[in-house]
Length: 119
Length: 112
Image 1 (cartoon, rainbow over the protein chains, first blue to last red):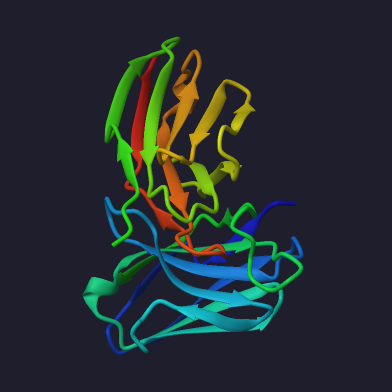
Image 2 (tube, rainbow over the protein chains, first blue to last red; image 1 turned 60 degrees about the vertical axis):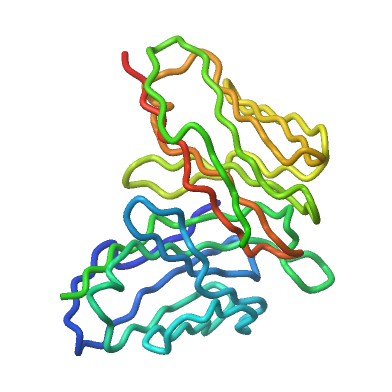
């Protein structure tokens, strides 16, 4: 099973709403990621979790709040978003090497993404 | 600013044609180079992770080569089929770890 599952596939939310994106993997991976992709642009890293701890935050606004409740799950909590936050949000996961950081040679597996529209 | 460049931006070929695209990346502090295929409405699919200069990898009709000294990788598709139509992305970790910086991609359309 090399699957990363994301829900929901589509989400429309108002600027005052609170919603969450969810991601799940059962490959035993201990590194999980959130990427954001705007139309016609490459995916951009938002957050990295390693062993359920936040290891990288790419200066993402606090209206995006990640959470890793266990090694298989990754959430992205959304609050007070702006229309410009509308994008495809991709979750991904990878193995970690034995000494700490994810190895740059590890394959990263992506989910299909959640399409977010902020109105 | 780290630049990962891909060319061409898009490519339209006939079924049966062979094609190739290029990914250019900074040659200093090389760790790995990732290739992905991304079909519409699907998840990006990992094709190759290349770590050694001179690496050549193959998956069916798709192969890739790596030159870390000059900072480029080529992806080749032999005998393109309509199902090869997708966006092909390369990605590069600028530091140790899996913090990937993606190129803008090459959009391939194969006509039957």
